[in-house]
Amino acid sequence: MGRLFGTDGVRGVANADLTAEMALGLSVAAAHVLAEAGTFEGHRPTAVVGRDPRASGEFLEAAVVAGLASAGVDVLRVGVLPTPAVAHLTGALGADLGVMLSASHNAMPDNGIKFFARGGHKLADELEDRIESVYEEHRTGAPWDRPTGSGVGRVRDYEEGADTYVAHLVDVLPNRLDGLKIVLDEAHGAASQVSPEAFRRAGAEIVTIGAEPDGLNINDGCGSTHLALLKAAVVEHGAALGIAHDGDADRCLAVDHTGEEVDGDQILAVLALAMREREALRSDTVVATVMSNLGFKLAMEREGIRLVQTAVGDRYVLEEMKQHGFALGGEQSGHVIILDHATTGDGTLTGLLLAARVAQTGRPLRELASVMERLPQVLINVPDVDKSRVKTSAELATAVGEAERELGETGRVLLRPSGTEPLVRVMVEAADIDQARSVAGRLADAVKSALG
Image (cartoon, rainbow, N blue to C red; front, side, top):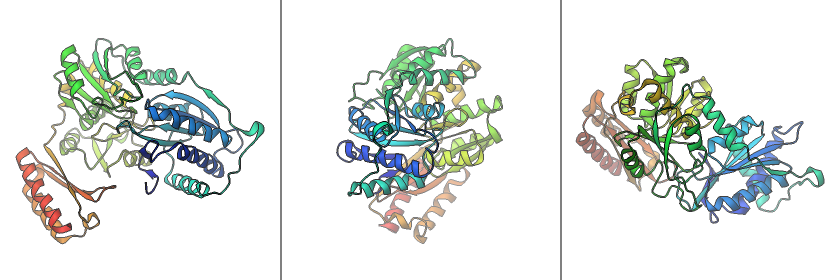
């Protein structure tokens, strides 16, 4: 698998790449590394462990719990809950560590392990590196220093976790959702129980689809990566809007009453205006990645809201927000972070706040989302090229310059090397879809010629 920790924890095919032995070893390593760092000093350590409904999560959860308890960490097992719920409970319960077992929007055979530090924040990169190093050291034979007797960790189910999380979500809403009919697509995932409950408590009339997880059907033709079922259900039931989550419910996409998609950029735009109105948008700034649609940038400029852009990945958005104290950020894919109320992307919270804006204004989501116009965007992946020369190739720089002159102020070009594959992503936006396709095609040819 190369380096174990990626941008979102450790992921792989469960029981092939990600085995029970690895899950146990990483958990023991995490306990030892955090102990060395002084996290547990002066008290008996506690960890919150949760998972999504994947069948493999059952044995991986058992391995993680065993590893932590064998290292002297008490475990609160919260069961099937969204990633943001585990992060929230880690902070709310004063735990020293949180562990979430999920591969998010990936297909069912995959799974993953994500660690949270005290407070529910992502572990620092240096701690992840140290955990991986310690894991490798002991995997090859170095014995662990293991507690015995009363020093071993105790395990109990924390059944109040779901209710604690739902109460938190409803409590932070600026207004109720009474009078709204909403369709929820839960992707047969981790939010299948808590998301409908939160919307009900907030006053909405709900219709649920994709809310019958059986361990095998997570993300299968439903959820935020497959919106067709949600679009049809919203129109069929005459709902005001639809909300779609992914497998671990850290992202949210929406559908308006006509069945049209409302993507992460549009959601960010709607929430930015709502938060500024109630003076919750600190520094009148929103954080997004360079992949955000140019229409979002133009809309924020028009509305007098500053846009700070980061590299692609919600971790970079979060880093920028934490460093400068910004309150709102996210990605086009629907990872939206409201830092006053969550330490990670929270799809249920995002959906609730979006619905709250519809209820508060009395305006349809379609109208609210029209604050920005999505410019046509074309993305082409160019494989089998030397991605390391994207920034140094004079031939490619010339081609990009010509494209930018052709597009002018109404378009944009972005060339991005893939972080995991030998390919370059070519993204072109333009006011006209035919122009975007034409320019993207020429740039893809230029990438092949210059870097092939």
